[in-house]
Image (tube, rainbow, N blue to C red; front, side, top):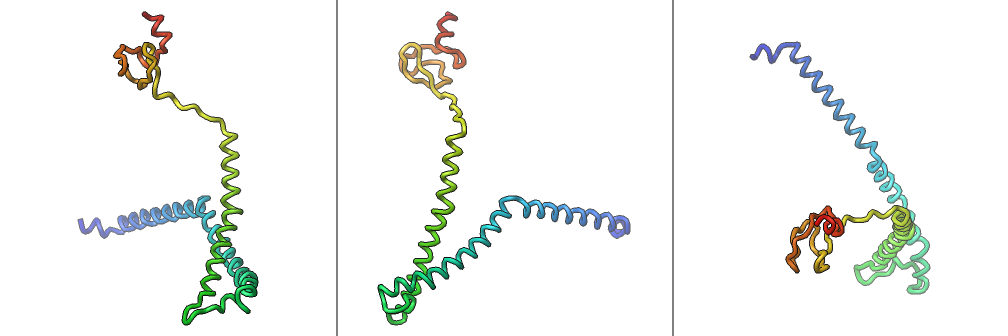
Amino acid sequence: MARDLFDRGNIMEYGRRGFRGGLNTLGDFRKFLLRGNVVDLAVGVVIGAAFNGVVQSAVKDLITPLIGIFVHQGNLSTLKEGPFLYGDFLNVVISFILTAAVVYFFVVKPINALHDRYERLRPKQEEAPTTRDCPFCLSEVPLKATRCAYCTAQLPPADETPAQAATAR
């Protein structure tokens, strides 16, 4: 038993199986990385980070000084009350609102419009009925019912239409 465990041939076989298993795992990892969703997500995060820098700069360098001219003589970010710098907080809030607006108008709205257009072009599939009318009292009964719950009439099987059932009698 111990001799078989430490046999050179067995050790080589264990090594080959482990190496092949490792390569298979790396192949699966490569497939995972090259899947469309992962690549799209990575591109989205990088573009989002760059876009965040642009919005932060626009708010800090363009919008905040314009608001500061009307609200306060100078830059809005210098506004403070004691130890609280509420001017910086206002900068962050404005940045958030601008980022949300850009994402909504340039991403969400166009995607929703494309989705609505696709839904209008796609043919509608009719749903299979779940109920049918009783041929005797004309009330709605479940499709698989064999007796009407309202008039207690014996109903034809669900695959037969009432006209077929009447001609069979």
